[in-house]
Length: 80
Image 1: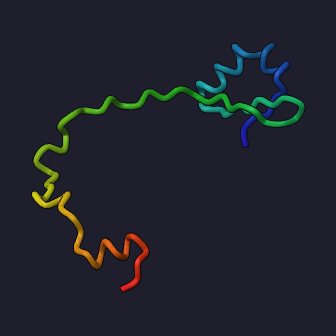
Image 2: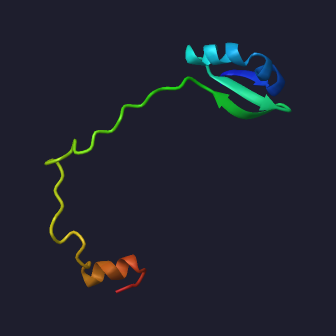
């Protein structure tokens, strides 16, 4: 677990705590001794690129065809 501070302390030290979190620290903010929030560094996630899997995925023409009766019965909880 990271550094634990009560809400009042966190409010008075917010700027310094943000700097600590940006450097990799994990700050837990509590109220009445109960942890309520976690302050961590913001990490930019890479943007998704549409079409990256083009040509790598194949879906059968009968993908959405009805299941065989015995398999459908099993999914419905019916016994043979």
